[in-house]
Amino acid sequence: MVRAALLPALGAPLELTEIELPEPGPGRVRVKLAAAGVCHSDLSMTTGVLRAATPVVLGHEGAGTVVSVGEGLSTVRPGDRVVLNWAPACGHCHLCGLGEPWLCENQYAASVETYASLADGTELYPGLGVAAFAEETVVSERALIPLPEGVPLTSAALLGCAVLTGYGAVHNAAKVRAGESVVVYGLGGVGLAVLQSARIAGASPIIAVDVTPEKEELARRHGATDFLVADEQTAKAVRKLTGGHGADHAFECVGRGSTIRAAWSATRRGGRTTVVGIGGKEDMVSFSALEVFHFARTLTACVYGNSDPVRDLPVLAEHVRAGRLDLESLITDRITLDEIPAAFERMAAGRGGRSLVIF
Ligand code: APR
Ligand code: ZN
Image 1 (cartoon, rainbow, N blue to C red):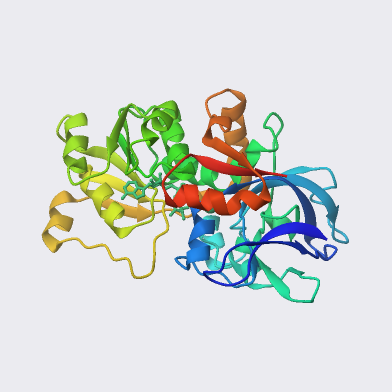
Image 2 (tube, rainbow, N blue to C red; image 1 turned 90 degrees about the vertical axis):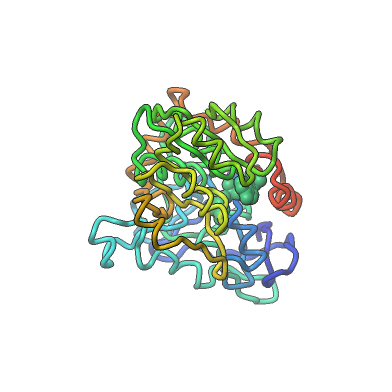
């Protein structure tokens, strides 16, 4: 039995409970979590903005060590340090074949199959296939990314969602170049990772925008050259900071129609907006036909930073070792499993950076 934070049903409070994990079958691996980050997507699953099969053990940003492996599996061994991948690519679908594994048609397959149970036999689903809010989990070997040396196992958890996503949004999706101007809407774990990644790219200026004025200090520490409190004047202020043009790149890290629209409006003619946040099904965004033509901007989303995690993690690890990527300062709260509801409250109020569950 291992301890886990369970969402019994949509809208219900999280429950701390003991769960029973099966021994890993063929192709599967049991992992002991060292740490798990609390992401807004976890909160969105409790509110129903994102759908998850329930009862579900949430948590999809984690790192740990391999405990045991299923029969015949040779890709990893007990003791290996791994980061968990919430969008593992199957390698054989149409989109994997096109070289876009982050859009794999089977990436959510694991999240709709039960993986563990309660003492009374109730079957449980793994949040995004990972179920990192538990002392241990069992996942497919495809959901493991080997963690290179030189990165502490606890802060490595953040690589599994916020940092792969944020770094990939800047470097894989938007392909920001040195000297380009960047504006980032929403400064949670994901937005802060985007700021650091823009700094690595040599972007300038790097303008951070949030509704919460208290985020300014955090934003500047992560690479922002300027900070704006979001209001109706934000696009105008961004133009002022970019020679009257608007930003070359905007990144939306909130997950709302209104901020997608605001980010788009803050870019220059021909600029690019990369949507990183995940919004609701009924949350609409609108553009006039004339402005779509006139501004000739690009609006695109990215999934998991358009990353190939096995290819990209060594790059991130090198940035960490060289001191360019600071995982530690993304973590503003180190918590226990019981404290996840409080982390959700901080998040809903727009306070802090990442909360990290330390096991
Ligand atoms: N304009 C600017 N910032 C805003 C706005 C707004 N209208 N509304 C909220 N924010 C800020 C919050 O104050 C907070 O700082 O957006 C930030 C969101 O941070 P977190 O809640 O910590 O979210 P995070 O985990 O970073 O995820 C961001 O990416 O993966 C997705 O589902 C996730 O949509 C979410 C987004
Ligand atoms: Zn996430």
